[in-house]
Image 1 (cartoon, rainbow, N blue to C red):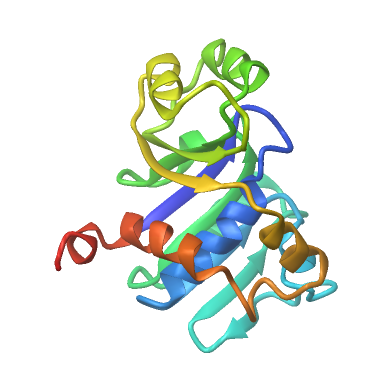
Image 2 (image 1 turned 30 degrees about the vertical axis):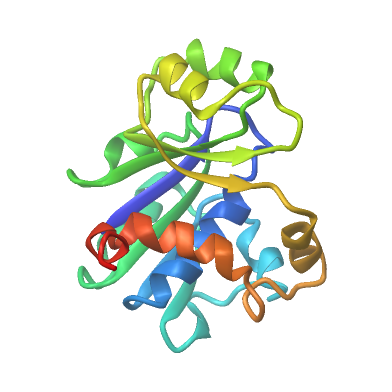
Length: 196
């Protein structure tokens, strides 16, 4: 399964969400996190990433941010097809998105803010679905996001200072917030999330 995360507006939390999705996926199956933006080594407090970097026994980080597009695609195609692959593409206009294999899930990360939805609404591309990062006090809802984008909101994650503190301290991989991982694991294994 390949999931590419991006956002129509930079600074929306795509890289942190990709890191959390990869941590969730690695609890279920071997996972490769492909970084096309260059932020993942810092999120995982790894300095500069060797390629590949084994973050734990089931999670590998592949920093392809400095590679040309052709080499990024080659690296993705070379990953074991039994692995979950989470790609941090940064912005929704990254040229790799239209060149990924059929069946790739294009998932946007978006905050329910007017400026983000305004930019998203004018985008020529659309995601398969959306992860919404919910901020306290916002008047826009998941339904507003769905209506503007014409794509379902498959997860809503509350923006919480705990996550920012974990990233800032380099502790995200060691102490990821379990409540967020549960939401994201349900995206990877929907059949398991519906069982009692």
